[in-house]
Length: 401
Ligand code: ADP
Image (cartoon, rainbow, N blue to C red):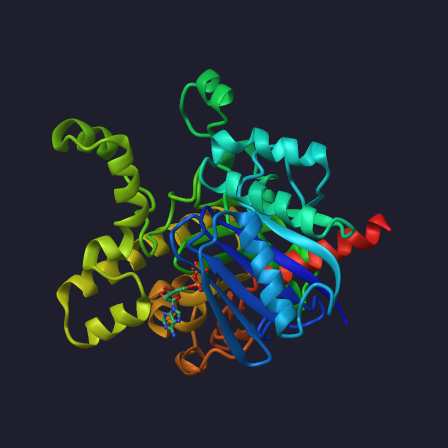
């Protein structure tokens, strides 16, 4: 069996998976794990393999040591890089700017280009680059492939991609809408034509990636024409801890009136806002439990979340003109029955009708949840970004041979 190693490197963590690219979205990966607390006094590595979980606690000074230790832990339990056949390594890279529209085999030149994009993603791209450099050293004979979170949205028309600010300043500083979660929107939307039994080029669809981060996309004939995240992943829908769209004037107000620094406001909007900011928790299971106990803050947070979601669905219906399918995915989208029901409630006049019984079925693979007489089909399609990255990595590696 040939496998792809998929790496998602953050500033203090590396998520890794060994993936069989022929498997389905809901199958467990061959092996998976997490290196965390890199650079802190005590680090931790976990590995899941064949139903067992292994943990190692030790200081992890940097990404290089972390990945090396992860490979050793895998080796000790029979799934090390010498025990399995790794044909490609796929790296999640957050920001591809306007430079990358599709995944690329990583060369020194490509790595330099990813480095050039650091000003656009100062927290994410350096960590991604660290992961790539370390992995290329540890696995020098295997093709490494960069898969960009922004790639799918590269083709958005200028009217959707540009912000109405001074054009020179925007061009000089790369200020435009890039969109994120592209791997997920592309993966999920690619299943829809088959589920509709329509040619891909004819399908107009809306995809809703509702996880801890959340985004919506409008897709015509496989090409994204709009998306809710912007220059950064802070824009758009209300999320677990991120505000989504706010009046930009709020930033000036908080700075001037509350004396908050730019870093304070950055933290507020990215980590202490969204449903967590409104009711104290960001996990929808907790929010649902609190609503059941008549907690008013949770109820309000839920309604703000749904209100914003419906605004985006409405605007994408207009952007597309005709919608064939609306698809829910990611942790909230795949599991939260009420969120799906409320997001699309009372839209029969627009040809959208959910079947409550189908909607209430437990999460079990790709499925339709719309009523038989719903003009617009509504689907739940589990996403699996690692699997999508693994497939790209293997495909490009094969093309290179
Ligand atoms: P991430 O954006 O971190 O990749 P996921 O797509 O895994 O997130 O989504 C995680 C979120 O999904 C959780 O924070 C929680 O709000 C939600 N979630 C997961 N399972 C359920 C469930 N059974 N019911 C409701 N919400 C759920």
